[in-house]
Length: 109
Image 1: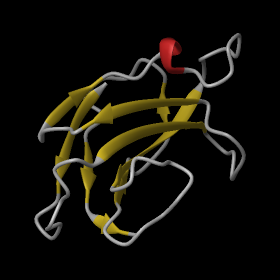
Image 2: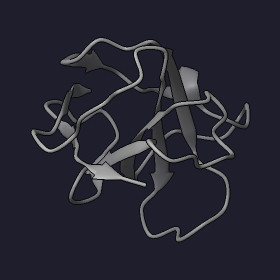
Image 3: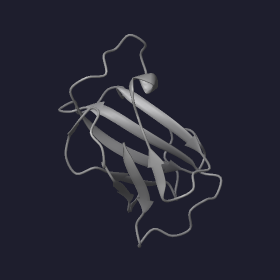
Image 4: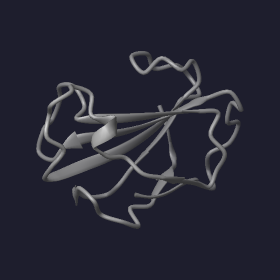
């Protein structure tokens, strides 16, 4: 859990954008995410929690260390990348259940 904020250099956010909070098992370079939380029309700063209820494949254990990435997506489709989409990530893997995992959206795609 933590807070998501917009970086000072990020401008022109689409008020109808969708925020995706994406958790991947630490050390996994690709493949499907472990868990994803979708938030329509987010308002920043935004407090968030991602947990076992957000696991992509039911029955997959939500344990260990994860890498967290957030994506502010203009078209609401997580499989496409369009101009104006923004992202941020937490700098290092964290244990599931960690608190104060604050992320700044500070990169344009």
